[in-house]
Length: 475
Image (cartoon, rainbow, N blue to C red; front, side, top):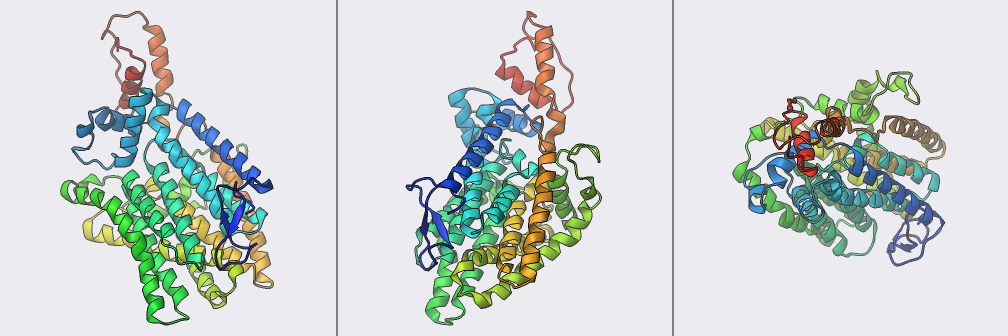
C-alpha cells in the first residue's frame, strides 16, 4: 500500500492492487518510508508540545481534584471532566515518572500515535492515488484544533485514536469478502475504550454501530435472502457486545451518579455546534487578517460554511454513495464506497442523537471539542465520496481537481493556525509557568508559606500544579 509503513497484503475478494491492507511483519517500501517519517515527525512535535506547553486550567483542575487523590477517591463522584481511562492512565504515569506536564499528558501521546497511524492506514486503504491520499492525510492530521488534543490531557486524543482505529478495522472488514469476526469484535472493544477515555464519544460509537448494520444490509440487499440479512445484523452485534462490555459499566455509573446539570459545557443550538467546529478548525490560533500566511478571506465565511456548506456536503456524500451502490460489484472502488457509506450514515445519526438527547434530557448540544470526532468523520466521508466520483467521465475529473485545490487551501490555513506556545481553548494559561518561574526566582530563599499569590480562578489550578511539581513550599 502506497502510504502505510508496511508492505501490503490483499483483502479477500478485492483486486490485488486496489484494496490492500497493512501487514505489520512485512518490509518497508518507498511510500512506507514517507509515512514512517511523517509519523515520527508528528509524534516528535506532539511530544515537544506535551513537554513544554504550560499546563491548562482543565488539566490542572482534574489533577488536583481527582488524579492527586488516592485511587478509590479518584472516582467516588462524577464530573464531566473526569474521564475514567484518561484519569487512570495519567495517574499511573505520574506515579511512575513523577509530577510533570509530560507525565500527565503521556496517555494522550499514546492516543496521538493511534490516531496518526490509523489515519495513515486508512488513507492507504481507501485511496489508491498517492497524491490524493496524501492530501487527505494532511487534512486529517494537520487541523490545529484537533492537534491541540493530541497532547493536552483531556481524553479527546486518546478516545479519537481508538475511535479511528475502530473505524479502520470495521470498514476493512465490510469491504472484504471474508466473514471474519475478529476485526469487528476488536472494533467494538476499541469503541468501548474510546467511551471510557472520553464520554462524548458515546455518540459516534453508537452511531457507527448502527451504520455498520445499514451498510452490511446494503451489501446483502442484492441477494435478498434470510442468510444475507442475518449476516448483516450479526455484523452490528459483533461490534455491539464488546462495546457494551467495556462501555456499559461507565454508562451505568452515570445513570447512578450523574445529573443533567453535570453536563455544563455545550451549546444551546445545533447552529452553534457547527459554527464552533468551523471556527475552531480555521481560526484556532487567529492572527490579524492579512498577517503572514493567514487566509483572511475565510474569516467572514465561517458561519456560511457551517450552516450551508456542511449540511449540503453530508447530503452530497449520501447521494454519491447511493449512486455508487449501483456499481458495487466494482471491487476497485469498494473501499471508498464502504467508507463513504459508513460515514454518510454515521454523521446524520450522530446529529439525530444530539437532537434527541437535547430535547428529551436537556443535554446541551456539543460545542468545539465535545464534537471533535466530526472533523475526521467529515473529512473521510467527503474525500471518499469524491474518490468514487473519479469514475465519472468529465465531472469526476473536475471535482477531483477542485477538491485538491480546496484541500491545499485548507492545509495552508491549518498550518497558519498552528501554535507551539498555547492551546486554542486555553489561551489564558499560556503564561502560567513563566509567571511562577519569575516569582520563584524573585522569592528564592524565603521561609515556607511566606509568599502569597493572588490569582484568578483560571490561573490558580496551574499555579498550584507547578508549586507541587517544583516543591515550592514557600508559596
